[in-house]
Image (cartoon, rainbow, N blue to C red):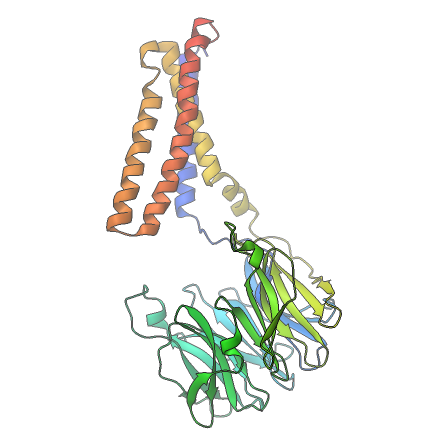
Length: 439
């Protein structure tokens, strides 16, 4: 400590580490999935219920995989360095599959391939953003929900364009627009058992409404059971005979808590009675009925409400209501991001806060040792900086964007916490210096 040059060098090195950590934190990709390994949010069941088709992240890269019904014998069906594949669907006879490819700008394009993943073909271009797609019952067409890509990339409120329903003829590749409603949101795309009706959910009157589009009449109307669902209903799925609806909604016991939990429910359309199926106290998504058995498969997000979403595949026997977890067995490839992961360990908010406190405490110690009366300057600087950031958060929230303001407010809160440590340390230095431990 008596070596003044060594002390200054230590302060300088800490400053460089802090500056580097801040720079990496600002410049790095904040995508929580960049190194993630685990199941995606979409899957499908084969027509004879013997295979799963699902998306899976491997070291941040999402691809389509196929497995047997027990989660074994997993095959990777897609491969691309520049796109993430998701939302897979089987054709009605199981010989074809479709899926979406997401590029760096989050635009989805539609692909089709044989069930083994070969003979892949791109069906839409980057000018159209496809959100969901499903095969027709004959397998000769694909129905999909889409919106112009340029409008999808615009900030909410800057465009009047929305989502509509389209059909693509696989023989001619001709695309026909079926609706022209510019819906704010269209989800849960499905086709009826007779192939004459397309089902999807729309967001209307502050709730999701299950809608039926008649292919014969080209009209939209409320789908069977839609008016019997709770207001907060999500991931809606019809049973094969269309007599029941599976959906997720907020559990009753979590309504008064700070964190909503989403459980799986089953609605009998004829009686209008709903039955709760799960008590997982997390977030259940993407229910899928088995076609030939009285079972339902679904995903549970065990990391709710954080990102990345960590999904586990479950199957419930609707007769016994027993849940079985399906362990997907995938051979993990060696990570190609070892250096990036190491850098990420040091380039985060916690590291920045620790280095900030260490730097100011070192400067305070230096001043207490060689310029005793100035030892409070770092603490005063930190107090002023915290106040300025807090004031800025209110100004930004009022004039620019509330979310940016909240972000600055969180930084201000962290700064106040760091400042408290520095202030306490500065006061403690008075006793340390007097005892001669720092000189």
